[in-house]
Length: 80
Image 1 (cartoon, rainbow, N blue to C red):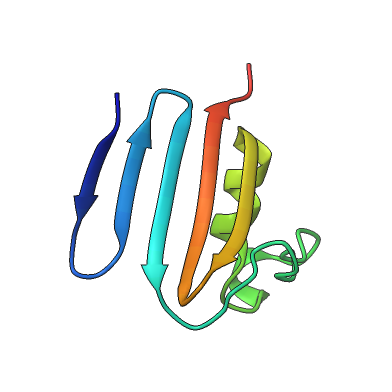
Image 2 (cartoon, one colour):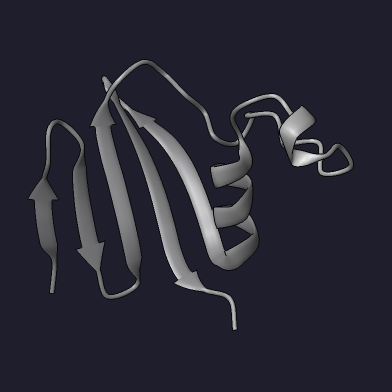
């Protein structure tokens, strides 16, 4: 089964094995995004990167690919 929903631009596809978030946007490679510095207090950290970091830690796999003008970020089942 595949469920697809577009909300204000991005398309989120729900599959039995995970989620694919697709957006027409500037190239943003989550694989090379800087990981947050976890040794610095939260209020002293630069903004950005924490969400990607948390998803990669929680999920079995989180991958990025560029498909034409779209960014595709796939998230697979949580780690157990």
